[in-house]
Structure formats: C-alpha cells, structure tokens
Length: 250
Length: 139
Image (cartoon, rainbow over all chains, first blue to last red; front, side, top):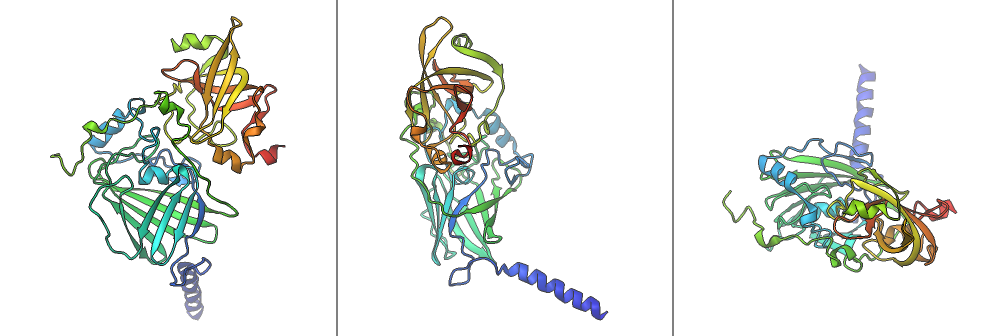
C-alpha cells in the first residue's frame, strides 16, 4: 500500500515535470519562448496520413459535395495563383518547405516566411483587433492554452487554397493553429481546419518544426525570375467571377 | 505535337509522374508544376549551357542542344529548386559556368511552349550531379 502511494507520487511528479516543460526557454512573463528560425516539412497534401516527411494528416478528407466538386474541378493550368506570385494565404504558406522565423515579444508574435519574403504580425493580448476586411492570410486572435500558443484565424478572402494539391477552402474557414515547444530543438504544430462549406467536419494535420541554429533568412523574390508567368505558361486566376459565401445565397 | 518535338535531340520519352524529391535536394516548386508541364512525360536532353538564371523563385538553364538532324536547338529548362536552398547547401552560380555540357534528366515538357522543360536533375556530361545534395559533403 505504502509502495503504491510512493509509486503514484513519483508518477504524478513525472507528469508534472513533463507538463511544465521546464526545459524550454521562456520569456520574462513565463510564456514559452518560440523565437527562432524553424525548418518545417513540405506539406503538399494536407490530407495525407503520412508522407514520410514528418506530417500526419487525416487520410481521407471529409469533403462536402461542394468541396469534392471544387477539388475535382481544380485545374492549375487555367489559373495558378501561387505560380502568379499572389499571396499564398495562411495555410499554403505554412505548408511551404522554406524556413520560417518566429519573432515573439510579450505583446506580439510575428511569422516571417522566407518564401516570397512575406510576414504576418499578431497581437497576443487575446483581444480581437479585426478590421472586418477579409484578407489573404486572415485575421488572427492569439491566446495561450497553458504552454501552447493558440492562433485562431478567420476572415479569409477565400481566394487561396490549402496546399499544393489544391484542396479548397471558403471564406468561412476557421483555422486553429497550436504551437507547443516540446524541448530546445522541436516544436509540435497542429492545425485544425473548420470549413462548413467544403468539409463536413473539422479535421487536423500535425507536424514537427525543428529549430535551425546558425541560420539566417535569405531574401526571396517571387516576381524577379517568374519566367513562366512572364511568358504566359502560367495563367493568373480569374477572380472576376469569384464569389464569397458570406455575400451570396448558398 | 509536343511528342513530335521531343523526338529530336532527346534520348527517350518514358512515362512517369514525379512531382518532387527527384534530386538530393528536394525539388519543391513554389506552386504546382502540373499546370505548366506535362508530368506524364519525361525525357532527357544533353546540351551546352549558354546562360544560367540564378534567381528566385526558380533557376533557369539555357541550353544549346544538337538534335538528331545536327541542328542546334535552343532550350530553356527550370527546376523546383531555388537559389536560397542551393546557397545553404554550399553551391554557387559559378559552380556551373557557361559552356559546360550538361544533361537535364527526368525532364517534363511544357504543355504549350516549344523547347521548354522542367528538370528533375542536372548532371555534368560524366553523370556527376550538379546543384544536388550538400556540395561540401560531395567534394
């Protein structure tokens, strides 16, 4: 009986130590320090249950009929927004293979994407600072769930896709990203897509980011040598017939 | 028509649909290549480098290729690799000087443009990979 109690205490102590994640750097306010340049796996297909590059998707995506139809009709040869160097949007940018730098203070969290030298800055006071204008990367509210930074993003303009394969999303999508620094070298990243227009239920994709040491971001111009666009082999998307689900009857 | 073009100056047309991971460095285009290139067709060409665009988002190689009739064709081929990744792997533009004979392997033809392709790998004439893997580890 006594041994059982001791074992239970040791077990709980172990869990507590693990839960507190004492072996990660922290900001002066005690929040996990996520600063750094991180390598991440290229995720061209968020649905893939595993591509051998450290990502776990749900396998089969739970398309609605509209979602399946959109995906099956996607043809980049008739309009390729990323090939045209238009903003990739939040998830297409997060699925990129190029490095990303996080710059974090006690008031803001910035994501600096090497690809195309884009950035996104988020106020981490937990308040909603929305302008009400839909954007390519959406509007994000940051909160903390224990040691996990949670970014909840809405107000997308709906002109982007989730990944290179072309999985669709609408302007009603909500993206929830959870960043959990596991140790000095690794950060767990979990993203949940909730889009009632194109998916019948929320689904998630997980991967691990790896800290890069002695590493600097390099300038990256998407436009400088985009010969494929200049010479007409890549066609810009036709947004003249674009619609948003918030303004049209379903 | 594209298939007819490919018969000149090229070794083979074989079928494959390889979108990534064709070189030691992952060939990760910033966009889907299937709209621009026919990934159902692959071939190989050999030619003399006349110019190299070392700029984002992708490298472009310009080649003089002698076809089966002895005529010189001017080709342009791109790759999914960007200069940033090559710089980190220890490569620089000067590692592939103009005038070098190179082979473009596992190339996909452009859907609507003559003598334009997407290459899976570039090697020197003797088969030595160029702009592939970590340069410092392969020297």
